[in-house]
Image (tube, rainbow, N blue to C red; front, side, top):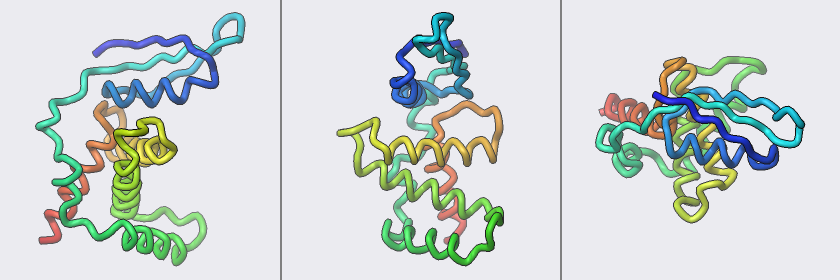
Length: 155
C-alpha cells in the first residue's frame, strides 16, 4: 500500500481522481487547498489492482442479466413504488450499480471519463462502502463479482 499526493487545478480534480481510481485500488480521497488557494491537493491511499483473473469479466458477470432496457424499467418501477426516504434492499443497489456499469461499458474504452463512467464508479463505490467499508479494490470489478454471485444463486 502507498500514499499518492497530487496537486492539480480544482477543475481537474474529479478527472484526476477518476483516473487514479481506475489505475489503482484506492481509499477515500482527501481534498485540501494549496496554501495559495489556487490549486487542490488530493491525497489517496492506494494499492495495486488485484490480478484481473481474480474478477469476472463483464461478459461473465452479465451473461445472465436481463436487457439494459428491462433493468432500467425494473429500477424505475422499484423506485416509483417505494415510499419516500425508504432504504431499499441491497439487491436493488447491486442491480442499479450493475446497470450503470453496463451502460458505462458501452462508452469505454473510447471515453474513460464519460459521465456514465463516473456515475457507474460512484454507484459501485457506494455499494462497496456499504458492504465492506475500508476495503480497497476496483469498485466496478466488485459490482461484477457480486452480480455474478447473485445470478449464480438464481440457478
